[in-house]
Length: 297
Image 1: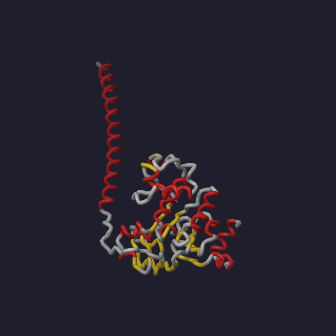
Image 2: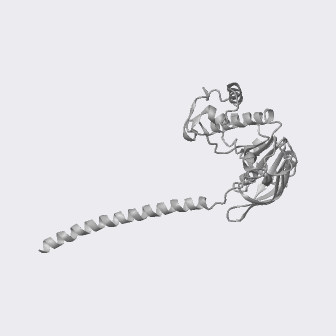
Image 3: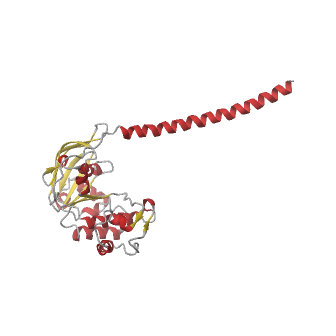
């Protein structure tokens, strides 16, 4: 009887161990599902963007940008950028530099009204809060650092609105030296563009900007790769094909912005310097001069 009791106890304890392990797995699964539910509620509770503002014909016509005492806030109403004021004339090329986390990307994303902000941002003397969101965003071109290609074809990625002829598409592709990579406009693009390198994805996105010719173009760390040929190609494209377009370049490598009309230095959410690169370089006390000096250029 004693042996039977011991055997029964062992059998029951093994069953209890299995039930305990199952309970732990279920608890962990519930926690994961609750995290997913929290994310859903987070998106549900985000205020809907208002897009019922004005739609102005042929806007922007020039590409002038004015930031007037702009402060940008995050979702916790903490200040990311503080009291930013500057003016970019139509067709100017402006390089934006600063340490990681200084607020460079936030500065340009404010143009898209992606953050809460105070102050006024004007494009061609029109406050962007008075512009229909869809119109605003489709008229500001951007090539992000992590360019995304959509599943489909080269044609659908370069010309998503099907506005251009095959000849125009090929002209943009060849201008960017993509012919060795792009063999056909119907060439398949795999999910997230995994069949192209990071630099190639940026150039494919840039070919779209070449076609649509937005009056304002933002290049976010677009020359951050170590390919010197890409850097040289970008300088040539900006000089020859975007000469009438206002271009803002967020720079990772300082040598890529020395040919810009002006340079903007952002530090801890503040605009600390904004002038021609030659002027800043000749001022030995300027942050830009010290940044260039530290890189050995």
